[in-house]
Amino acid sequence: MFDQIDQIFVTSLHRVVGFLPEAWRPLASSILCIGFIVSVFPGLFAIVTVLERKGLGRIQNRYGPNRVGIPFTKIRLAGFGQFAADGIKALIKEDVVPRAADKVVHFLAPVVLLIPVLLTYAVLPFGKNMTVADYDAGLLFFLAVGGGVELSVFMAGWSSRNKYSLLGAMRAIAQMLSYEIPLILSAISVVMIVGSLNLSEIVKHQDHYTFGIAHWHVFTPWGLAGFLLFFTASLAESNRTPFDLPEAESEIIAGYFTEYSGFKFALFFLGEYLGMFAITGLGVTLFLGGWTAPFSCLTWVPSYVWFLAKMLSIVFIFIWIRGTLPRLRMDQLMNLAWKFMLPLALLNIVVAAIWFYMGRDWPRWFICSGIIVMAYLALGRTLMKHQHLGKRIYRYAE
Amino acid sequence: MTLCLVITAIVTLLAAVCAMSLRNLVHCALTLAVSFSGIAAIYLQLDAEFVGFTEILVYVGAVAILVVMAILLTRSGETTQPSVLTSGRLDLIGKFAGIGVTAAIFTTLGWAILSSSVLAKPGAVAPQVTVKDIGEVLMTRYVLPLEIVGLVLTAAMIGAVIIAYKEEAKSRSQVLPGAQTKTATSNQPAVVPPAENILKKAGVA
Image (cartoon, rainbow over all chains, first blue to last red; front, side):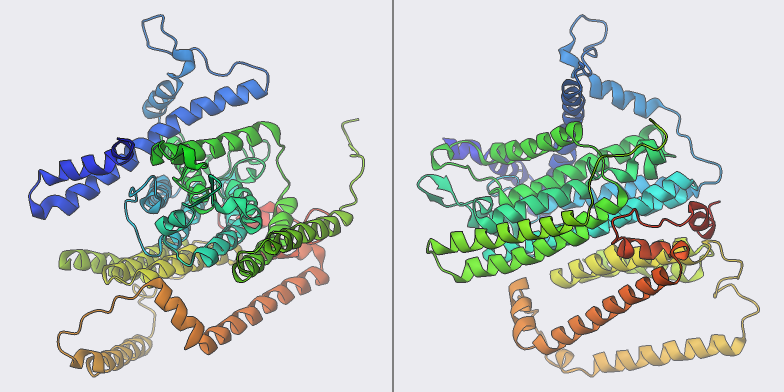
């Protein structure tokens, strides 16, 4: 019974495709899978934008959107009609393109942003047997295709012929390139332990239980360190606070999409959120056990529910961080990536190797966590010693 | 499958021709990225997943960005010089030399491929190679070339860092924008060059 509910999407896909003649089946199956991704995740984007605005409102001691409901009635839906209003507004707005802009590149940039972001969903295992394209090198595919985002950011910034756009694009590219390194290195530790680049294999490796608790990678010393590094780097990759310098509105207006309006702006917004969902999905797959349940007594809950729940809870933490943390400065951003996260990520690979070769005894827990904690403390103390932190002096404001 | 191959090949070749003939350097770089992705698509159609993904990761993700940033930081995007293909002033000798060199390379490559032992075996099936196999071979049989490549890349990186340091020592106000990320080591905010310079170079201002 529970198995059937778990596999309901897979079996119904097979049923629907089964009606068609043999030659059409692969095509129909891929079209249905694409339709699933293209409809589910933008829908999720719509709901999350409302939730984010409401959450930020609560954090800032105000209400957030609570008015838009069904038009011509008294039904208010607690403001959850907001995304429809926003979408309609974006669609009917005038599309302003600067006269000096490079028209073709300016038009193509949002499209080029969406293509790689949507492609990354192809390899994510949303549930048991629910991977659209189960590539042998799925992780490599995800990381490779994600690189296309930088090109689109550059296209947007350069083609707008606007100082703020170009500065925002250069900031964004520098930031993405720097944080991609700790992101990939922290994922490598998982690949070393599992021995496969296939994301389904990585999930299967975590699908065991001892004393009723799952063997998620995050419950090991190297996994916890890797997850924290991955989490920080994914915040930076998706341009979220505290790493939202590319669109720091007090300095460079809106960064690389300053000159975009109407539906193209909405596409950038969509692309950014879809990228965030995809990278949290990858984090869930690598460290939080993908679609597996945390306790063996909860395995009856369908796998896709677990995946979505884990993904959305990480997105919730992203929103929480956005509401509570200030923005970093450019040199702080670069220092964090190159001086702190890169050495720790490299060390984490060594720790993962030690963990792998020390067998199943208890000492490995102490040795591995000891190395990571000591390195963290030593590196953090040394870097903070040179910071000369003190009382902030305002030159003009006092 | 053949139709797919033809479409990808046409797109790749068109993009490559555009990369040579367009006037705007940034456009050239972007079409070059399209042509790289086309090559990756051809690898994928040949079931060479690993090579295809690496092609995207390295060429589209890194090399194209590097080219684009290099153009932005060194010279204006708009060139006054006519492009190679439309140039009337370019020496005919130079053109013929270029065509000759290309033809020679293609003949050699074609001859090498046609006379290789792979084609001699009729009905050879493509081997099922997993990423794991590639990794094992890289770590055992081809470990020396891999290490040498790593050494060369490390040397290049150290060289880049040294060049960046020299710029900073000479005069702090003339730091190249590209060196900014590497030299932002002091706890003071990194020296940011006047934005107008960058933008002038980029042909915006």
